[in-house]
Image (tube, rainbow over all chains, first blue to last red):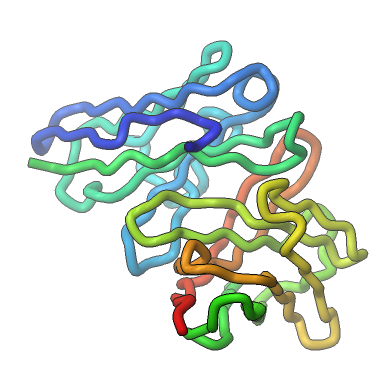
Length: 110
Length: 122
């Protein structure tokens, strides 16, 4: 079981907005930044969001992140077929002195 | 352009030690604010952080794996390595190496290797 909790799956049709949630605790999300990664199996995972809501250069503004208390979310607007991938939230955990990941959400574009 | 490449045996026997090396090109492994990390993804499961190492030798390990993990870094070869002892089938996974940005409250992996599949089987 992962320290951070995500729904195992999400789906949407092209053009829709999909939101993926991530729930943690005061030792991780509540007291640290949240990060989001996109992973297509067989490829290198990619950083999508850092510092809760910042996008690295090259990441489309269709991807946005937010955080409130011990929860965070990733929103993908204008859904596209190439967004079909696994999405992971992550944070530093002060109690564990390490990185914790969510279990991952498999996004399907219908 | 930063590149990371994992290398090592693709098959390891149960109870033996898994050894992987990550070769870094396009950046220095001695840059401040960057640790170098290992993450794995078992088949059908999610990402799991294994540990991260700084060029000074400072390390952070996942508590659940700490007793079996050793990481090292060779600045002369721009490589860092992972050793995981007493492996079982549960250690079968794709292993990724990554650069771990580590400054203030920022702790994220900003560049990853393509991954190396390691299967534990007799």
